Image 1 (cartoon, rainbow, N blue to C red):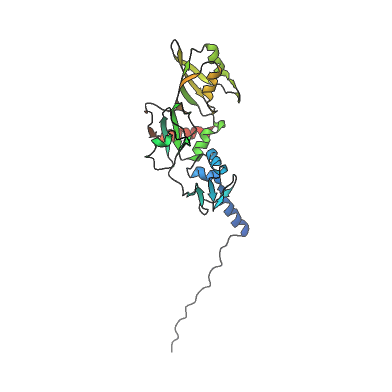
Image 2: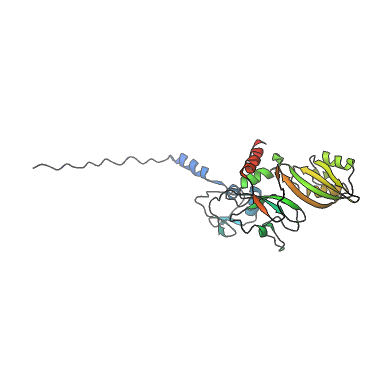
Length: 269
């Protein structure tokens, strides 16, 4: 009687486990600071993300987040105002012509018009890169790329911003040179500005002013100091990206070459 062949099962290979130290390192590498996660998700710039965290609006796995806390976006439940945040969205970059009488915010406790009122057709969560005063108008960048926003806003980048400004009276060359060399304000001397006169009437003057600082109401304060208060202020350019003929209250997507140019400019500084 012929015996049947017996199937021989080889023993399973030993489990390929990471050493405990390597496992802990890989776990740590998956975690990131919470403000960076929020920026990468397109929730806000890093600076604004820090404000959301310190304001108690962010939770991680049911616990109110604190500044400096780390999390793993793939595993942890991160919520903003009680809403669970999902993964990354496609990066979006827009230019918006903000009208006067509109708040550069997505909501306003006083019930005033905000830029969100003009962005209903945008599917993604976007936020403004910097701001314009309620009484100012013109070019505003909007994005959901937190790192992009952070790079543009960081003082070390010195991103130039150009404004058309109507002022009361007729500033003489001495006043203009003062702005070109720096004006001493309550928060310190301003960096030199580029200033040129475009048009003069009997009572008013139109100036073109380029600055790279981001102080609150800086141009208004500079001109108030010189005795020529601002009557109208419109931002027309940020680092070569021009407002052009975009009507007030309208927006357009930045062209790929515009995004590439400003990213290259930011990376090189």
